Image 1: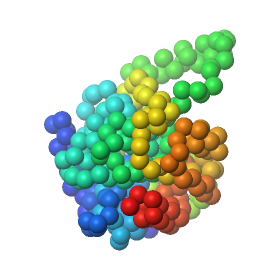
Image 2 (image 1 turned 30 degrees about the horizontal axis):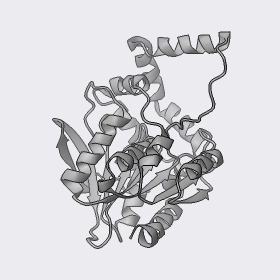
Image 3 (image 1 turned 30 degrees about the vertical axis):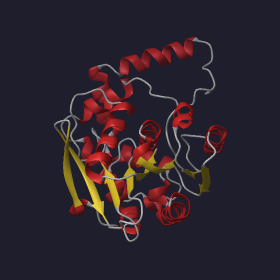
Length: 292
């Protein structure tokens, strides 16, 4: 089992809130690397990658506000909020253009920073990135079924039902079942991984974060972000991801961006944790040959 990374971590105060981050490695002649986790995860989800990549790069990882060991204040959570957090972190702590690597929600946040703050970003690595395109297929006309679904969603986002749902999804058995759906290699689902995901869900404010994320307004579309972005882009897809059609999403990225390399891996939604050796090697080679 890979050790947790907390012993190499510290905190940063941002907008009067405590932000947890990890720094390891030192390579002043190469661009630093900032790892950004997905929804419900934390810096712990990168523990395997930090250990490997820090041998050749200055590696940072950050807990987004509302997740992991960072503060969980009652604010409106959105891509815009995390974009501001990451941008300020690069400016105040890292101090030079950085390669951003983000999984799922963290990938979308990385795209937002690269598009709107190009001076801060040397390159972007997306691992099964979240976020909508403008040309996503329109929803079918309203029907009784869709109306019921909409009503249920509204109901579940009310305080009491939302709290009950949150208490359900943070159970260890539910976390394990969810991971089993999105990991191809079930041996990667360790007790340590389940603990790392469950622990922050029992901290004060976690339930409010859960509710706020689902109520937050939708941010900029991916194609609009790509139109503004100028740095190299690496797409790493765990092609066994049941939550997204990776082949289709990859083709959409290529339609809107030229400076892109793409690889499909035998993994699920979190390839960096499931096949870390492959992900680390691809990131390393891309940074050394394309970014530098």
